[in-house]
Length: 445
Image (cartoon, rainbow, N blue to C red; front, side, top):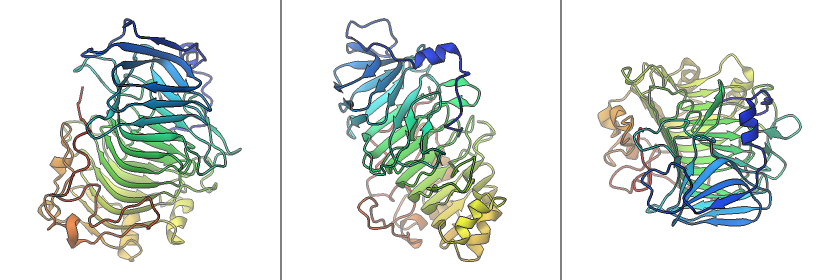
């Protein structure tokens, strides 16, 4: 996670020019771009979308440089469409405040944002990523921020702002690095409001964080973060959205926290405070030290954030499960006053399953229903299974498991977003339907 209000004017001139306004170009003449396995006409897209535009699955769409969906404009993407980020120009899709992106796939026909490099040669950071800016509140001085690498102004006072819909969408091999500590997230929700809908989303093999929320009130459901090189699920600047059914798996060659959580790094008590509600999450690190020494911690809860994390399974991280920043009363104060909550979870297979900062509250009963270091056979999913890079398995094997009934879940609020549950973790036990299958993909190259 990096500051979203830094001054990026020192970036190379080529990067600045990349994000400058350009004249829209639409070409179906199959220009010289890389499209692996090309079997459809190619449309190269540059510049700015000012009206309503629809992309259909009988073409490939290549993002050349930064493509902006302007305020008042709408981009509709049909199920089964493939959008390709051009590596040489750092192809990136940016939705500005007041713009909308409706990328609505299906389980059988997901929408895929991917690299232009040949299969087998793809890697993290091949192209930019997806950035969505909204008008929901953020806790930045002045009420507005500027996205990393000048990817748009975000923030405002409309908690119900609607930036569109993402459904059955994959974003893979994105997160280009412009300079050290200046990389794009797979999907950046920047001041995005709860009026939109974001569900069935996978971010795979991203160079920076898989998904990051910079303030706002956006909700997310049925999401997979796989093999991100930094954090998998990240928030800052006052995010107060809701999340349910979140599956995280890491690759130890390059990874940081499963969750990295801040309020505001410059003033830890700024309001509105980061305070998401998260129910049913599985965080699976990579314990394989032959793969690399990364993937250290399941969650780093710090810098004044509040949180509710319930119905969780945590395993496989090389150092520790959840950790709360005890040196900062802005963070611990949210636990002490009852705002931050944790409960109904299992952590196993790590050198320290829960940091002492969390054990304090487990032992005094403030964080109830948390079990540590049970045998894997009683849980029904294995560390090796959910950290399998090519085909992670998050699903418990039967209903006779800790995740399937022996440890009762805490029911989320009945508020129209959350779904009632009979299990902990991101995925229901077999033989229930595994919502991850059929639309996700886990290629390493």
